[in-house]
Length: 134
Image (cartoon, rainbow, N blue to C red; front, side, top):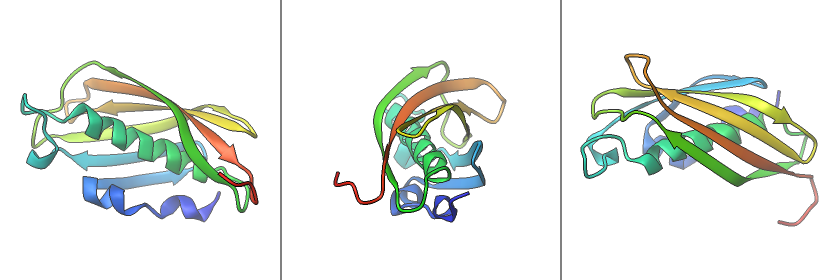
């Protein structure tokens, strides 16, 4: 496993994401739903939920990259099922649907404290080989 996967970007700390497990086949994280992450209806903003999943998909890809390679998200789709209220916690689990040489596809399931499914995010990450310009 690529150890760089355990290092998180400053954005993760800003959002309050806490990575709880890192392996090549599963990344888990938690994020407390704070007032500054709410939408107009007083629940977790959809963009914050999507950002949580995007960070996990990137982390999962990094955990599987060959030395010197990089990644970027090239596609992401979110289905929302239930809100997560302020004060609750978003629990995320990211697992692979496809791990290829040029792309990887990840699915992140996000639940709240009562176990209710709140969203499923499917994203595709490109694998940029070492030495390639972006």
